[in-house]
Image (cartoon, rainbow, N blue to C red):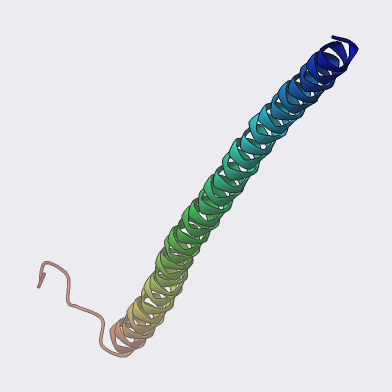
Length: 121
């Protein structure tokens, strides 16, 4: 009878130990799974962040390139307008000089040969 009680107690302790170990194993597996899910989520978030950064860098590069092209075009237009204005001023001065020379020539010719009175050209 005492032996049966001892065997029963031994089996009971063994069963409790096994149950306790199963609970520990279950908890360990649960936390391993949770850490694995967390690591996967962090990895995915990291990849998404890199993709966003790459996209933003590409967009920034594109905007810079477009802005540079726009500024270069505006500079070319301004340079053209300046040279056009300079050319216009140059040709106006040239025309004024020609007109002045013709006026001086006409004035000189008139002083040499004045028109007779009553005659107009």
